[in-house]
Structures are given as C-alpha cells and as structure tokens.
Amino acid sequence: MAYNKLDENEKYVILQKGTEMPFTGKFNKHSEEGVYTCRQCNTPLFKSSAKFDSGTGWPSFDDVIEDNVKELTDRDGHRFEIVCKNCGGHLGHVFRGEMMTPKSTRHCVNSVSLDFVVT
Image (tube, rainbow, N blue to C red; front, side, top):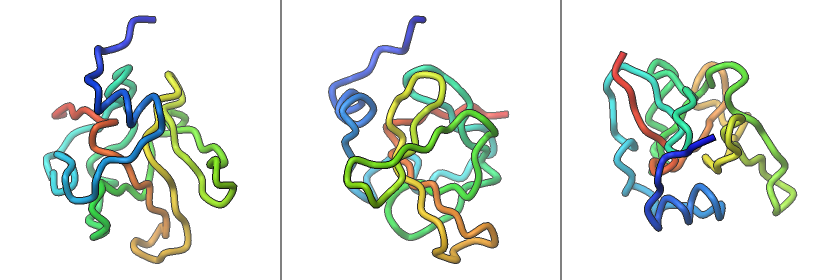
C-alpha cells in the first residue's frame, strides 16, 4: 500500500510515537465541519462533531469513526495509545473518566497525525 510522503516532524510523531508541543498544532482550534483523516494513509478517524476544546493544547475528540482507531497499552503501562487501525500510525492517547464531555472520553491527538476533509 502506498502511503503519503511525511516530513521529518510527521515521521517523528507518526512513526516514532513522538508528541508535538501543546498549543502548536494546526487543528487544536480548528472548527470546520468535516472529517479528520490519518495523515499517513487517509483513513477517516474522527468526525468534526466529536471534536471539543479540552484546553489541553491538542485536538480532542470524544468519539472515533467506528473500527478505524485502535487502542494499545502504552509503553509506560499506564496509558492507552491510539493508532490508525489501517496503517498503525501513532495518533496520541485516549483518556477516560475526566468528565469533559457526556461521554467522558478524550482522544488526545497530535495535529501532525491528521489531515482534514470538508464534507
């Protein structure tokens, strides 16, 4: 399968499981209607209707597009990493029980792991 060409920062985050600096990502305050897709393989991951401002400095979503985001136990053994189910690209982490939304789920995602398609 052919993937999109990634720049060095995208490779660091998506392939090496890095993290972008908070409040720097292009999608942190983004509010258009559409779908956020995987930067590496274009798989649809999150609908804009699931996005909310968590105040954490990263795009946050309380829901995923079914079956397109996979959760893995993080290397630290305490958190849950989220990856694109299609290509395995690192997206960020998921947190539960914070009560920020009625679903009490926050998928905290690096902007560089995402692209956006207007629907």
